[in-house]
Image 1 (cartoon, rainbow, N blue to C red):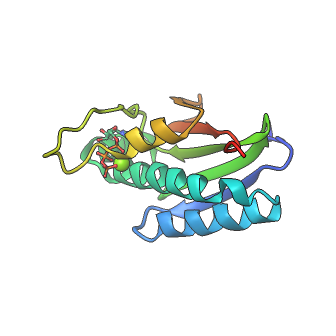
Image 2 (spheres, rainbow, N blue to C red):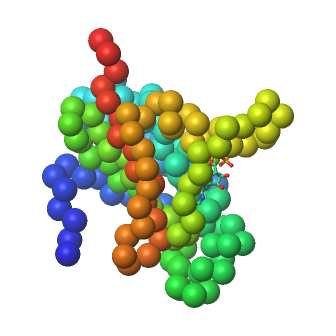
Amino acid sequence: MADVTPGKHHLELSVFPTSPYYARVHVQRVLEGWRRDDLVETAQLVISELVSNAIKAHVSPFAVTEAVAHARPDHIWMDLYPAGGGIVLRVWDACRTPPVLRVPSLDDEGGRGLCLVDLLARSWGYYRPAWSGKIVWCTLAAPPP
Ligand SMILES: Nc1ncnc2c1ncn2[C@@H]1O[C@H](COP(=O)(O)OP(=O)(O)OP(=O)(O)O)[C@@H](O)[C@H]1O
Ligand SMILES: [Mg+2]
């Protein structure tokens, strides 16, 4: 069944290093169109992390094994829509493996993206749609005046 959430903006993205940039630009343009400039900076930070993670997951050796089994497409997608005075951001990738919030030590080179999402989002999580892959989502609230 078609997803008819009112006001939803959907964007397909290549599994390619420039995609976090295009995701940031898209989020900025959409939020400006909604007169939600107050959310632009946070939404750009968050979408950048979620899209980067989706790309990494998509090209990981584990995901490649899944690709053979499920004939994965060579793209990910993102969407955003208004909800509860804030917005919801969602990113789909073809890998069924869940995201894991890590507590990075000072020496760790990675493991900070989801920490950032966890700090900035009102809530976040993931689910696995029946058709394939998974969706990592987060909600952003309007910042206090
Ligand atoms: N979309 C995803 N699919 C599968 N695993 C994910 C996904 N997003 C995150 N993860 C897992 O959760 C871990 C933590 O993600 P996080 O973004 O915090 O760190 P990172 O991507 O490893 O490093 P950094 O974001 O600091 O460059 C990742 O190392 C990965 O194992
Ligand atoms: Mg990351």
